[in-house]
Length: 195
Image (cartoon, rainbow, N blue to C red; front, side, top):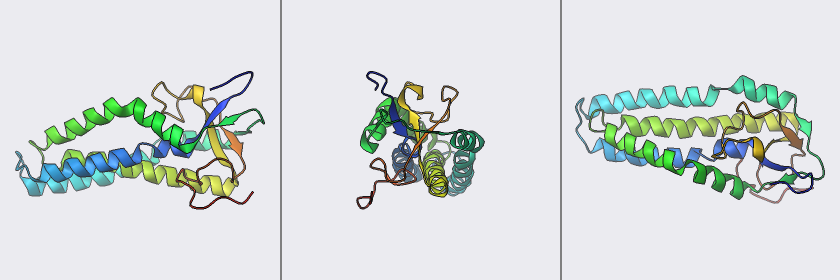
């Protein structure tokens, strides 16, 4: 993290996006297995309930705490020359390590729920992943409109390397749009950015 006044910074969009792929794929896998189980409600009702849960969960996850993100982005300060920008891969790895047991428990719960409502738990999990993708894309559009990337202090993140808009976060820092190794929205840069 920090040495001699240095501050470690992680990209806000990368922290948000880090959970999208594991939640999506674990959810799709759990839903696929869940369809094979007849369940108490039957497959048709399970899949319809799961589809409704997917849509609602995607919308809720994509919209929750937007006001907080907007407020933090609006009061963001410029990153200092001693600030250390964390690589995208490190941020993603830290988030996934910090959440691995939650991901496993969520996957097992989605599989177990298939015996009651087939595929519904898996589609709920996949909806969480889709919502995180949408939220990171929204942050990316904000970054492009600000012409600046948003960063959060690593020591203000939760112990599991998550919550980039949590209570401990007092503000964001900004850098130029070409800083770091992730594009606006947190995806990998496709080409080297012109500086």
